[in-house]
Image 1 (tube, helix red, strand yellow):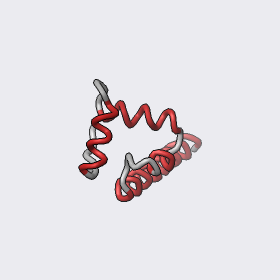
Image 2 (cartoon, helix red, strand yellow; image 1 turned 180 degrees about the vertical axis):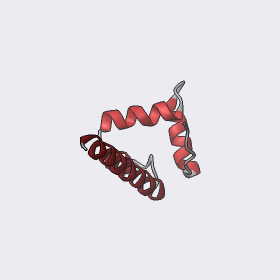
Image 3 (tube, one colour; image 1 turned 90 degrees about the horizontal axis):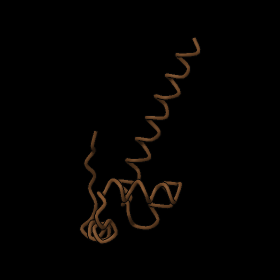
Image 4 (cartoon, helix red, strand yellow; image 1 turned 60 degrees about the horizontal axis):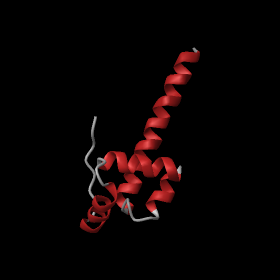
Length: 75
């Protein structure tokens, strides 16, 4: 599944230079793996504030879904 995100032209150009022959998803995934925390990526200008908040909300929602499924399995 893919998702669309909006980034500024400046951030797009920076990502484009960094990615080389990788996809944008691979670049972001690699960056997240080496940084370990979304907040560390946010501070580097890769994600703008709006995208950062949207990703945080998605993570929170997915985590709640996982917790609910685990609780349902315990019953």
